[in-house]
Image (cartoon, rainbow, N blue to C red):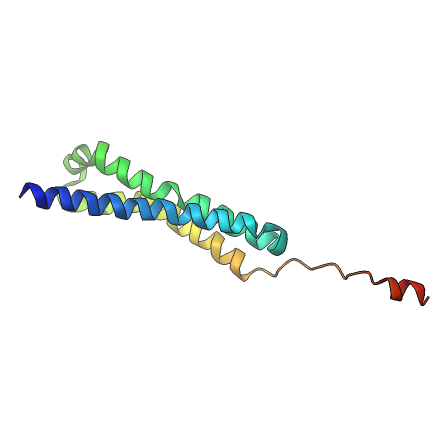
Length: 120
């Protein structure tokens, strides 16, 4: 019984770590692409950073506020309320990432060739 609880806790911790590290990795990748992609990469980076607090709010809500929340809204609704608290982070972040992915890449300036200038 004790081993099952420890295993469940470790799996939960691993999942939260992935939920936090994935947006961080996305933000870093988008930051590295800002010069190449311009506005689209900035939107994607902002989306990743907006998504980042979602799992943190979920963990804090579960750790600190689950018992009072269950008393206030009932046991069956408490999980839904926690999901509703994290949903805006995911939706807005996903929207920004999608907007960045669908935006036009920044126009690359035309290279100046020395022969084109000399021929005029």
